[in-house]
Image 1 (cartoon, rainbow, N blue to C red):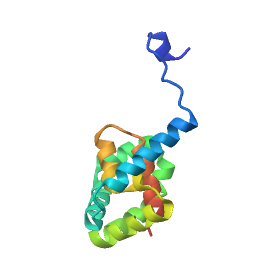
Image 2: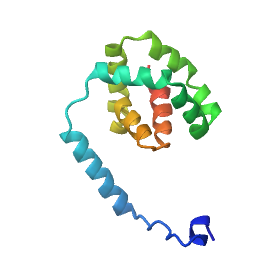
Image 3: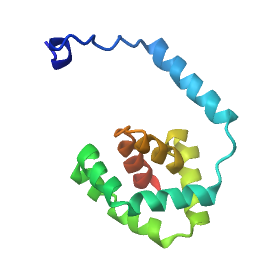
Image 4: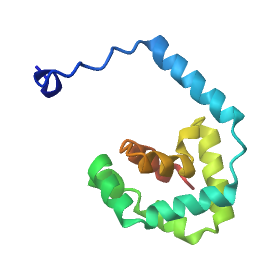
Length: 130
């Protein structure tokens, strides 16, 4: 018995493949309708994320010290690029991986909303920024 069932809370409903596909389609529709990302804003957001000690501590806790430490070189590259160049590098990663959820502005929003799993997106982005 899980802790939540022991307390009388209902377990989360089962999600089917169709549920996940519908959620993905809705996310992609919203992303397509949203204004185009501004490269300099994405670069600035990524730089702010890697400079924020609380984000770094949180991502170490969520993604693990080994994964976060593996991104050290990428974090140094982030600091070396202009916001515009960094934003262009982010756009390349997002396009190549077909992964709009890797945009730094979205990662920041999810972290602010308490979604710790956004740290995995940040690690993935950093692992792919060239």
